[in-house]
Image (cartoon, rainbow, N blue to C red):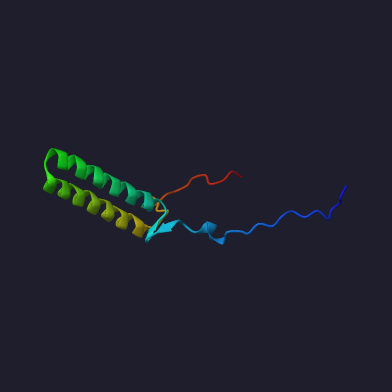
Length: 98
């Protein structure tokens, strides 16, 4: 036996693991929301262009993009881990047993 002198290899540790993912000012899940809004806008443009024409396609594109951007801005202001805030007074009768 070689004994206790055996040492495990060292690996560098990435220090940014506790930070949320950020891309161009969008954090975490809102990156996916932005991708969904862009994809939905493109699909809406194609459908409206095929059915009604170019101008209607542009209107659909602008409407979907502006709605998506507005929702992202409003939701991101509340925070990445926004939760439902219950208002009122709550009485807990039995918080622990004696």
